[in-house]
Length: 108
Ligand code: 5GP
Ligand code: ZN
Image (cartoon, rainbow, N blue to C red; front, side, top):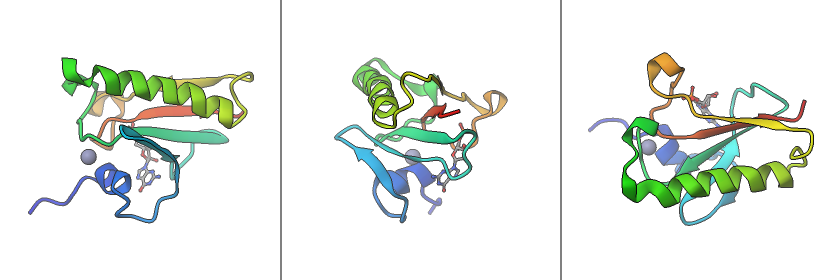
């Protein structure tokens, strides 16, 4: 059997990663190799490979990812100072983990 997706494992709490926030649709945890003082990953529980693989029925997930990013920035106290949100899409776009995730970086 193929090895299970790392972010599916984290979302299912099959690895010891600390989950900062969770709801029906997604989980939020810290990036293991932060690119900024604060680097969070906002990850849908559903396995979707990348932005390219979204379908119409995934609209609520996408919307929840963005609203959660906004809430997390506020909770972590970086909303006012500012932050960046981004998706890497496929290898050419720098994607290394092929389970959709939104990066939130800030805190400079
Ligand atoms: P990508 O390049 O696919 O957009 O981003 C993947 C991110 O996942 C990278 O920033 C990388 O540091 C992070 N990452 C890789 N493995 C792990 C892990 O096991 N735990 C956590 N928390 N982050 C990881
Ligand atoms: Zn997955």
